[in-house]
Length: 338
Image (cartoon, rainbow, N blue to C red; front, side):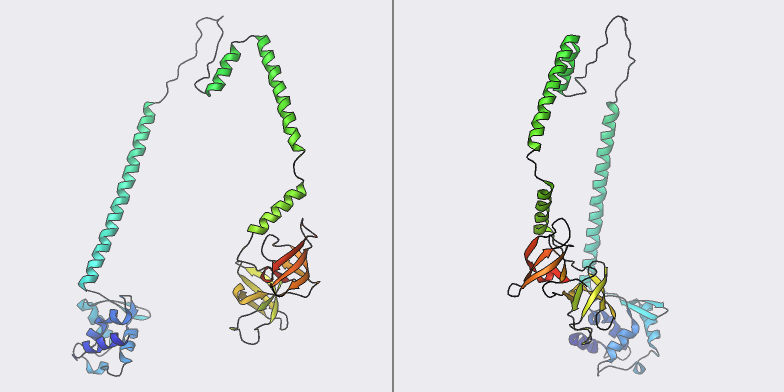
């Protein structure tokens, strides 16, 4: 910014062109050609000791000068209920060249998209034309001799093996069909017996549930751990000493990561992000809620605490795994129930 102001001061030595050249260096001050309020530019300029005051120029007010900039084409100006806004027009050859290249690239990309769309449309049209040429011709079914048997050949519509079976069965007599039927029923009985034997070796429902729970334990982790009814501690100092390290109960969870917490001592309700909170580990024998991992959502009883490993041992009290003893569950995965 110091370099920009130095450039600005060197530009305004001419009294008649005072703010003209100042605003011409608008892009230097703000490092862009964004639209800004004219007072912001003026205040930025006069904040330096060596500035020239408005009274020493040919313009009586900043509004007059702003309008003059618009008439001369040095800036884009527009009036709003909040005042006049100006936008510096960068006429640097390098900037203009970059803009032209960018517009050329956009036009080229658009042309490529149009070519692709036309190509797809042409392919669709050719496909439709091909289908029209292959339209089947339907004829009426007629019998020249009333005593002649009607036969159907399904080889074209079905697979090769199915078509062969159909044609073979149609050429056999009634006795042959009975033999085929008895053979098929025998095969069905054998298949049913063979499928019934491995059914006895199936795992019990409890075993399947336990396997599913173990799989969930390895994979079911989430970054959102807040749950209604748990006790939490505020760890942020942004709320002051009144709430720092104080405990409360989560009354409501909003958008997974935000909670409405009712303070235990004062009864105040605060809306806090989970990054400003931590779980509370109770004394052994107290009830806890599992917040993460495969046992997420289950209630349990705290059995013991391992301070060196920052973990605990709990006994599950709800769900299909009630009574299971879980060791090595991390502090951040459980919290005291209110």
